[in-house]
Length: 115
Length: 110
Image 1 (tube, rainbow over the protein chains, first blue to last red):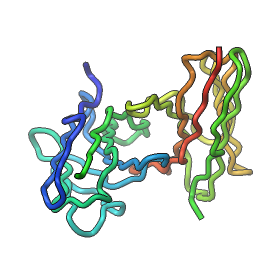
Image 2: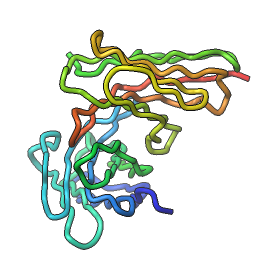
Image 3: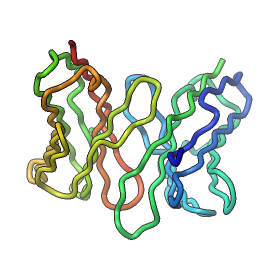
Image 4: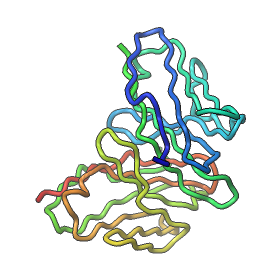
């Protein structure tokens, strides 16, 4: 499967715990994007990364959330001290290297539930 | 006001009907316009994308962009029960993040 791979598919955490969501982009893609989807809503942009660089984090909450895309390995979205309001589906997307525009391709998401 | 507004639905049509899904936007910087289909518990799947104004056809699907009116549409001809899903419009200025509508849920009844 050459698509965007996200794991885990489902994650349950208790309030105050940490959540780590992983994303491996499509082969040949070097741009990664994270989006959050609340029930009955569209996708809201969180962060855009290239290898070892955060390009745009304008959609990330200022506290408890962080993201990285290391030189080796998957991109990680980390949520510290989770609260009930963090319950959502988190989607990762990837696109190829610039300069020509290519639309983003999405994984099947991680559904985070906070008890 | 949201940058992208999508007709909320839900939409229910009989099999074989022509479906029209619509979005409006306010940001003149958007240059690329995408339509994604999302089945329950799955990720968005790219259906079509267009650059600037005009029409693009792919099988039973036609995407239409009118930049002067800031209005985009997706038409589905000869709709099938397998087309039942949530359809998301998305827009991009050419690099970086895409901005999505809230989606329209379509049900095609046999």
